[in-house]
Length: 271
Image (tube, one colour):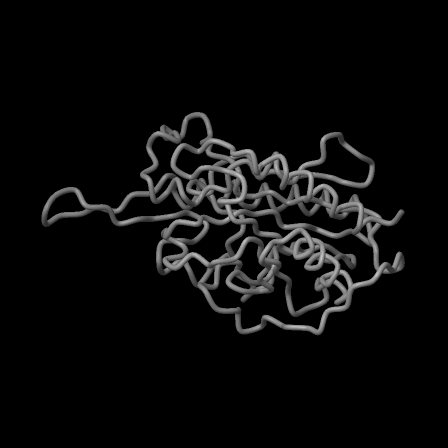
């Protein structure tokens, strides 16, 4: 299970445990990884068959929460021996696999199973959810088990990249969207990559002209309980870089950003 206190969404300030390093940039093969696991938890807008819900049931605010196209944006053109991918197949409104068990955001209806108060009339409202807590928890446990097995199979010297995008429009999770292009997040624990690795990631995007945030406004990176050493880093990209959030269509920037992300893997993997 996740480490308690390591929730991805911490508002617009760094999490209490967030760390800020002096980064260095250099080519150092000893700091590279044998394998990369791309973890993509929020790209889907599908619901399980029999759930009686679909994408069309979501309102505009809920639709902003989906990380559209990240299952394409981050994934290499061809499968490789050293880059693996795991994608959660269902919408985060049904089950958010990045939440903690007993997540602090549960009180706001933003836990593993989302619950929202919606108006039904001028003076009335009701609570709605796209899954029961039991349904969401079953999916949560099954998915965590699958990721843990895949991560363990990839072995030591693996980097888990937590792949996300964020909305440029005020939404349920962020009422004040940041004026950055890309956010890099990591944990203050043994899963934190070396400062040279973080420095190389930041430099890669900054050298391409992007404005990069480090553990701000989003902090930390997803971790799983695996009996081996591995590192985890989160990469969040602003949706304005690659899509139109009103039409939900890709823009020309999609293919440019896709190639730039793929180029990063060559920097992070051992030659």
